Image (tube, rainbow, N blue to C red; front, top):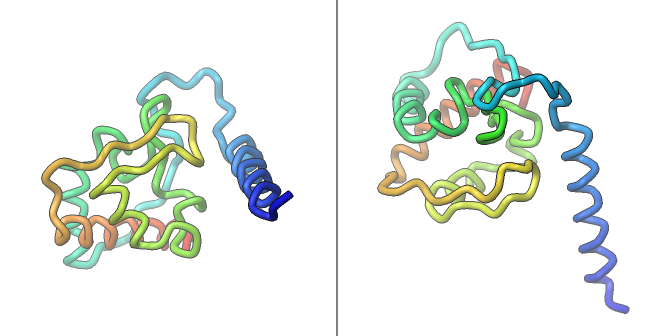
Length: 138
């Protein structure tokens, strides 16, 4: 038996356990309600302000205002799963350009964001990272 099979099983098992442990358990939440509550930073850098506008235009319909996620729609990006050491900036770039297969949350796969530019993505990432830092996610 190859090492690849046990490793794959371990990764899948760890992902399932993480999803179970991190998934909100409030069964009374309605579709579209925020998944997490966050603290907003006192201020945003200029690039993050531009990123906030782009996020609101491109991403908030699914990921919610301030990236808090929406029950039954999409995950929060202000969450330890998306900290830079686990989902670095290239993960966000790839997700925006080519989409991403479901792996941590039970929302289904994310399609690519049609017509998004590299500069928009860069500024959105800056915005997300500043929100994350304000919430102790580094």
